[in-house]
Length: 374
Image: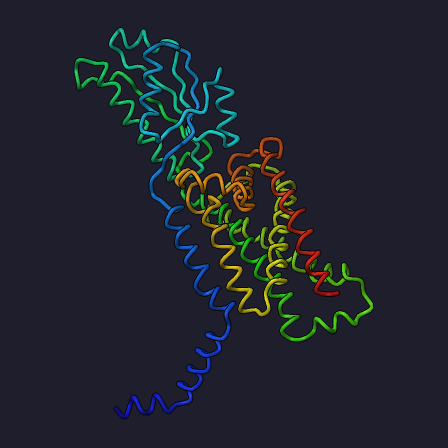
């Protein structure tokens, strides 16, 4: 009892009661504490899944026979793989895997039926995008199981294995998981730092009352805004170099693309992150609110970007909704430059999407910031 009496009569208890009353009076803070976590739990519960479905499978069928078509149908029957069209050559198939349009490619040789008729194992060539080691390993296992099961339906001897898929992992032959995660984490870090630091920088002006002092300076609105953004932009570009260095030194991450072009694309994405931060700052009244709001925005962006969990493991709604996520496009670009050595020509839809996001978000955020200065 004495312990409880000391607790209730202490300064700690008085301060705790005061904080609770302040929170209850702050309706906006209550909204941020209840609504965003609920939505995030729902999004993560649906979007994050260890299962892999709807992997895009390209097919080059040189045999063009009933048996080869039945094999392709068997591979797509359980919806783990979905055919994304029949291609005419291995070159086209490799190009689409390289561009990230396909997760796996199946090449059926012209002598497929003849080898089966002679009771010989028919070799299949399978190309799998090994950038995502987890998805690549699962895809390889599924393809082997389906081929073996289909082979048993063709042979009267259940022990015989008439189909022998020869699987080659491209771009990440060792299936090193860090090679998949590190490029995604680069985008993740840039998203968090650029939005949080830029928003905190603007909100700090409100909290300390220096925003009114800026209005008294003999400078234009664009000068005030640019003076705040340029140092932050340079610091974030330094983070890009730091992340690439850590990836190379610690994880032996390859860099197979053009460094100057990648830096230009990274600069474009940093503009997207900074504009998100400024926009958050203009709708927030304090640093506490801007931090809570930034987590409400950034965490869904991260979880639906493919930086951590494969896009293919998400439900259909989230796969299409992620197209409106600028981080998804940057993660695809980062993995393409680092692991596949592709350039803007192959990744131009994602670069174009980033440019559109940057223009729209910068225009809106600058307009709202200038209205506050006015």
